[in-house]
Image 1: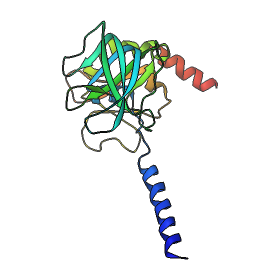
Image 2 (image 1 turned 30 degrees about the vertical axis):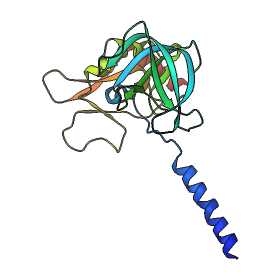
Image 3 (image 1 turned 90 degrees about the vertical axis):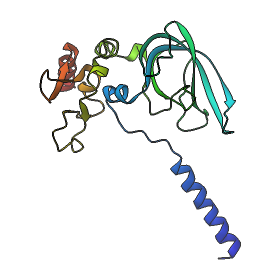
Image 4 (image 1 turned 90 degrees about the horizontal axis):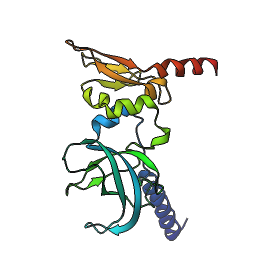
Amino acid sequence: MTVVKRSYLLAVLLLKFVSVSLTCTCQSKHPQTTICQSEWAFLGTMQGSQNFTGDNGKVQHKYEIYIHKVIKDIKSTLKNKAITVVITPSLLDDCAVHLQKDVKAVFTGSFDGFNAPTMNKCDWHEEYSKVPRCQRRNLFRKFYEANCGCTVCQPGECPTDATPHCVWRTDGSCEHKHSHCAMYPGCNKCSWRRCVSFYECEDESDTS
């Protein structure tokens, strides 16, 4: 193999490695974990969007989102019934969030160094029509946020010490959509608090 061919092969392999390394991989999370780790969350509708070049010279994308209801805001800068700009990576980026105009959805994300709301594919964004009633209750009555002292963990990944936690079986489990993990009053333990729809979900799973 000639030096030129060897150099070409190494370049191709390097490009493949870079493309794989840039692939956006997201850890499976319960909605409660997402809300607790997020810096902001709201119910909103995307009104418009466009590309722009950030201060770092990278192309990014910004959405203009009308906020119906603020769920969480650690900066206290978001307002109900107002339009805010939310930044996401370029739509060509694997971590970008792709939204449809005029579709009401739940959004979560964080703030950048300039206190601008940002989000990526690993944050929770879901059409509101697909959010079950139990999740809506947990969001707007702040049951998720009020119980951030509880860790939601999957089997084999739970704390081995006295950290209070609930075991979450799978991403598609009924706990995902129909339960929240809550602290027992007066003690350092947590357990699932389930909506009636949880048992309906379990019955459907048993018969399928």
